[in-house]
Image 1 (cartoon, rainbow, N blue to C red):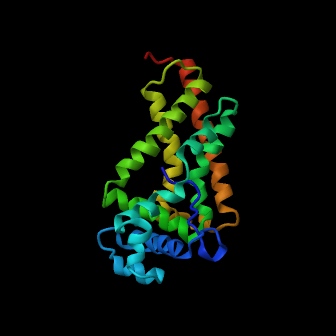
Image 2 (cartoon, rainbow, N blue to C red):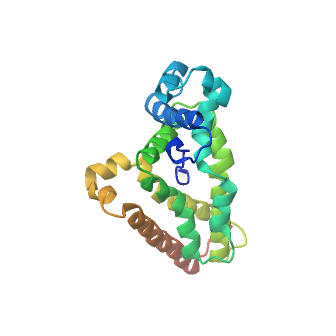
Image 3 (tube, one colour):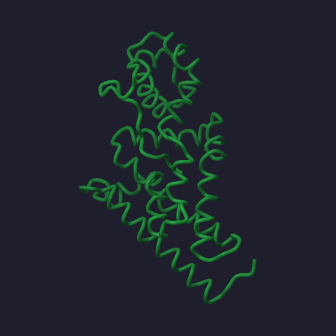
Length: 227
């Protein structure tokens, strides 16, 4: 699962009350995503941010604290994201639209969005322990919440393995926008360069997501599964 819109504080706009902290976050995003946690030194971080090395300790405790802040702060509250698509009053289309919003949002965030996704991918292959935390605190709750949404819309008392597979497939549509970014750029570069590309991806994800749920509805009506 990718994060909601990447919104690192920007010292130039006044969004962050302490410009030095904001510069460290942005330097950390760039260096950690490009080099990884282990290969990035505190001296490099401080030089890139234009601060003294001691500022890292002052604001974040140590390099690991800065890495954790870069990794988690832009995500916002996971409970807010879940509430956005799990409200029982929502139609299925509105629920899926809200579910896909975090997948699409980084596409509108320019270089920061790309770097943040790259940082997530690097953490998966060079784990520091934060990926497990992300799985437990973010991805698993969102999966379970979407399972509950589809149980409600498909009229199921309890989820089964096929419903879990459906949610995994729905998520995969959004995940591929980022994991497969290089592939997309190679086979159809115009898709990410067209005007309003993020909005068009959002429409496509919603359209295909609705089709997948409808197909599952029809399959269950024709051949109900046991358990």
